[in-house]
Amino acid sequence: MSPHHFRQPWGGDYNRRAVGRDRPTLGEEASLEVSVTEEMLVNLEGRRIHPLYATAWMVRHVEEAGRRLIEPHLRAGEDATGYSVAIVHERPAREGDRLTVSARATRVDEQECETAVEVIGPRGRVGVGTLVQRYIAEGLFREGR
Image 1 (cartoon, rainbow, N blue to C red):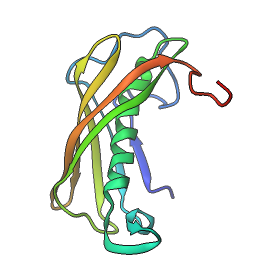
Image 2 (cartoon, helix red, strand yellow):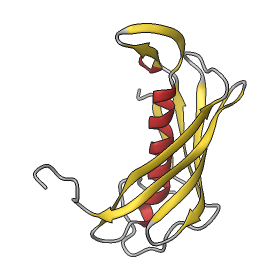
Image 3 (cartoon, rainbow, N blue to C red):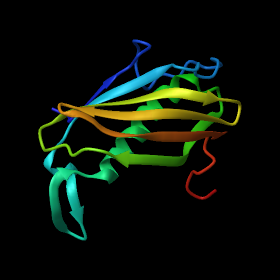
């Protein structure tokens, strides 16, 4: 079983795009559930530093939650890319912990979507921050372009 379980707030398939929909509304949220696995523990330069959830994995997971928020709103011929991430790793999480990673729209315009991101674990908040995604032309970063 995959360590990722995605909850779609719109009740549909994550991969389907609602062509031409409006931008996310302020306060709109998306989240995912993550079980911390051995591969998500802190490893630097091939060495296990701590037996704890790595900040690098937290960044990946908040980007995934943010993508789930923005993707159903992308228009035909449009995509989005991460522009900035700021995260504070407040508390450790251990292997086997279930985490809820959420992204909530806080500022939305025609150029970008900013979200407040939060990671909650069994002992409280693990991380908090912001994620900004910018809208781009679909295929802009394809190989060879």
